[in-house]
Length: 574
Ligand SMILES: Cc1cc2nc3c(=O)[nH]c(=O)nc-3n(C[C@H](O)[C@H](O)[C@H](O)COP(=O)(O)OP(=O)(O)OC[C@H]3O[C@@H](n4cnc5c(N)ncnc54)[C@H](O)[C@@H]3O)c2cc1C
Ligand SMILES: Cc1ncc(C[n+]2csc(CCOP(=O)(O)OP(=O)(O)O)c2C)c(N)n1
Image (cartoon, rainbow, N blue to C red):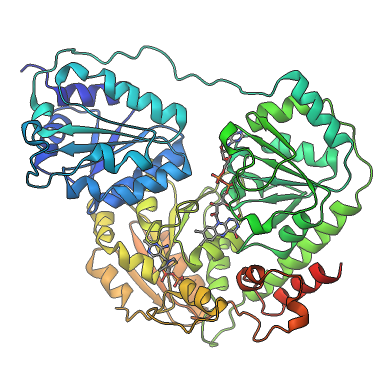
C-alpha cells in the first residue's frame, strides 16, 4: 500500500521520539488513527474529552521534558483541546496539537463543523499552520515540532481529513540531527557588572522560579555566598525548596509571611528564572535584578534596575567566581527565623483529632505528604487543593508537582495525573482534586480503568467552590452560586471500576490513604473536609488599613485570621 500523508505524519513523530498521541477519535482523524492502528511504535491514548488529552500531553511533556502530542477531530473535537493547550502554552511545555480539519474542498463554505483552527489556536501557540496539500509534509510538521521544542510551547497543525488520506509525496521523515542544547549566558562584561552590583549590596533576597530547574546546587551556593534567603514562586517549588538551608517559603496570595517579608525587607531582590505574576508583592524601594532565559520576560512584573538574559545554571556558574563571600548574615537569620515560625504556624493547623469533625484539609495534605512515595508525582486542582499542595507537600528533588499554575484552570489535576501515569506507568501518581474540579472533568474517571492507570485521587470534598467563596468573602461580597450538591464520590468511583473510599472522621484519613496507595489499580478517597478553613480577620481597623493597600488586606490569605493584621502592622510601623 502506498504511503499516505497520515503514515508519514506518524513516522515523522516517531522519528522525533514521540511514542503516543492523546485524543478522541473522529471522522476527520480517521486517516491518522488508522495509520496508528497499522503500526507498532505509536500508541493512541484514548481519553473521554479532548481537554483531558491536552492537559495530559502537557503533564507528560512537563515530566519528561520531551515533546508530547494530542489530537482532536474537526470543529468541536479540536475546539475542546483549547483550554488545555492554553495551559500548556502558559506553562511553556513542548506540545504539538493535531487539529483535524473538515474536507479541504469545503473550507470557507460554512460546512458542517467548520471552524478555522489557524485562527482559533493562534493565541495559544507559537506556530499554527494548515497543511492543505501533501507536498507540505513532512516539512510543516517538522517546523511545528522544532517550534514547540525550541520555544518550549504549543505548535498546532490543522490537517483536513482528506489530505491525511492522500498519497504522500515525500516518504520519509527528514530530521537527522540531535536536539540542540545550547548554553545561554550573559556576556563577560555583563557578568562582571552583575557581580559588582551584588558585591556592593547588603540584605539580598533571591526570588527563584521554575527557570531554576537543574540549577539547585548553583542556587544554594549562590545564597551561601550572598547570605541571601531564597523565596520561591509556586512553579519553582519542586526545584528549589528541598535540601535548601536558605529556603524561606513562598510569597504571594497563598504564600508564607516569611516569604513576603524576605522580599519586602531586602535592599536588593535577585529574580532568577521566575515570572511570579503578582505586582503587589514586589518591593518598591529595593534594587531589582532579574536573570531570565527569555529577554521578553525582563521587567514584565516589576520595574527593573538590571536585566540579564541567560540560563540560570550557566549564568550562576559564570557568576559565582566573581562574587565576594559576604559575612553579615542578619537579614538571612531574621528571614530563616521568620520562616521557622511561619512553618510552625502552618504545621499546627495540620492536625486531626480522632472523632473531631470536620476534618481539616491541611491534615489530609500532610498525611498525603507523609505517606506518598519518595518519587511520587502530585497534581493539584486549581482551588483550595493548590493551597494545600503549596503549603504541605514537601519536595525532595525526586517528587514532582503539577498544577495549572499559570493558566489557573479548574479540573486540571485528573487529566494531568493521566498524562503523568501514562508516561510513568510504575510511578505513584496522586491527584489532589476539588469536588468542583473533579465533577467538571468527571468523564475521564472512566479513562483510569480503560487505560489501566493506577492513579490515586484524593477528593477534598467541601461541598462548595470554596476558593471562590474565600475570594467573595475577601472582597466583602456575600457567597453566592458556590454550593455543590455532591454525589457520593466513593460510590461513583466504585461504579467506574475504581476502589472508592470515603473518610468522614480524622482517624479514617491515614488508613484510607494508605489503602488507596497500596491498591493495585486506580483508587479514589473522598475526604469530607471543612468548608471554611482559611479565615479572614473579622474586622480591620482604620488605623491598620492606613498605608497598607486594600488589595493586600483582601488577598493575603493567611492560615490564621490574625496574621494578616500582623502583616499590616509590620508594614505600617517598621
Ligand atoms: C489559585 C492559585 C493561586 C496562586 N497563588 C500563588 C502564590 O501565592 N504564590 C506563587 O508564587 N504562585 C501562586 N500561584 C502560581 C502563579 O500564578 C504562577 O504560576 C507562579 O508564581 C509562577 O511561578 P514561576 O515564576 O516559578 O514560573 P513561571 O511563571 O513559569 O516562570 C518561569 C520563568 O523562568 C524562565 N526560564 C525558563 N527556563 C529558564 C532557564 N533555564 N534559565 C532562566 N530562566 C528560565 C521563563 O522564561 C519564565 O520567565 C497561584 C496559582 C493558582 C492557580
Ligand atoms: C475552568 C474554570 N472555571 C472557573 C474558575 C474559577 N474558579 C477558581 S477556583 C474555583 C473553585 C474550585 O472549586 P473546587 O474544585 O471544589 O475546589 P475548592 O476550592 O472548593 O477546594 C473556581 C470556580 C476557574 N479557575 N477555572
